Length: 517
Image (cartoon, rainbow, N blue to C red; front, side, top):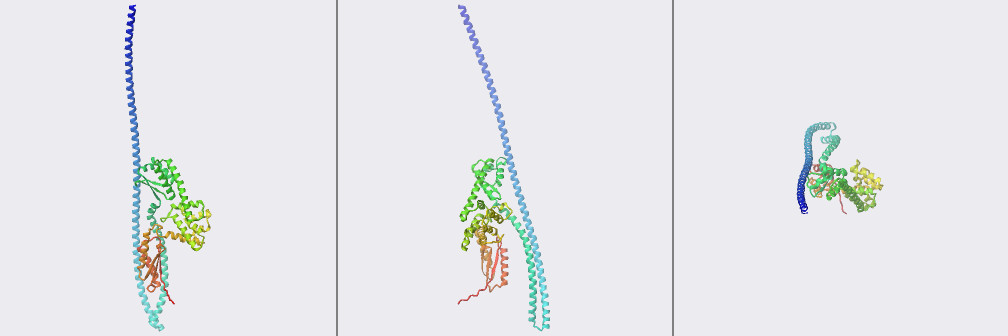
């Protein structure tokens, strides 16, 4: 039994030792495998990190390349703009050179004309000497033949020569005037073309441009959008050109249609205010701005009708009237001008006992064609007549529209009042471009210039400086001299003053006999 127990104990001890070594070996092997697995994971993580790093670097390089391309594109656009301005400047310089060349040609022509006049004067002087010699011979013949005295014969001969000379002078004057008229028309067309070309740029900048102020220049990039998609969508939907240049914190909208330009301004301001800009938001903002613009136009037309106090009009005419709020003529707002004409026409009609409401209506709608004249080849009077007939306006209103610029004859007194009110509203000081100070200075200069001539009693500038009436002293200025005085005043005004349009010079000579009993 003891041997068996010892054997069992030995076997148990051997088993324990073997199990212990086996467990230790298993544990060590597992630890080594864990170490190898951890190293593989670390290596895999390092490879993944390196791959991610390379991808990020590649994306950064691509983004930098895109930024570089955008900057290069903007640089090229700026260069093209600068080249365009340089070309325009060169064209303007060439125009100035051409203008100087034309002036030199005209100066040479004028010198030639003066030389011809001098030669003609010499011929006239020689002719006068010949006539004097003939006159002496004729006097002697008449004295010997008719037994008249030398003075009587001289008088008779002078009367005959005077009659012949007057007829000849009248014919020459007529030919000169006709030739001058023909030359004047040609020269006027040429000068008008040059003047329009010179002032077109200023006018365009003033009447076709709106400016949208920005909080910062960073907004310009969002307005342009990636590859210009935002600005292209905006221009396509509005029909207005968006100019994003170096002007600090501002974007320029350019377009001939004032309503579209105002719609674009409202839409762009809303987009800038909201912050996020993309093609979908651009379309939504433009639709919203168009609805808002329609409401503003309707409100402006309805308010004008309410202020003037006319009866209700067709909704389309109300819209057309509201569009005039965004139209100017010679710097004068057309809607404000139409309301002024309506009030003036109504006041004159009231004094004369005519239909005041009809008169105001004719005055209010007299320029309604200007709401559409930019989109048509017809004149604003023709368009206005078509609109008035289409929406069945009163015949007096239709005739007032057609006749206020004398395109047709006025067939009623109210049409004449509308034409007069239109002239008054357009010619009042400060109504159009000319400032009140400039108007006053021009009127004072006009009167002072006329007063500077001898024999002038008093000069008055009327019709907003478009006419100067000069009253002369009848004992110092004869009827013939009055005609010459008017011509001399007109020449002096033309040479010494700058004035818009035409100025009528009227010289008044009268004799009054007054008795008291």
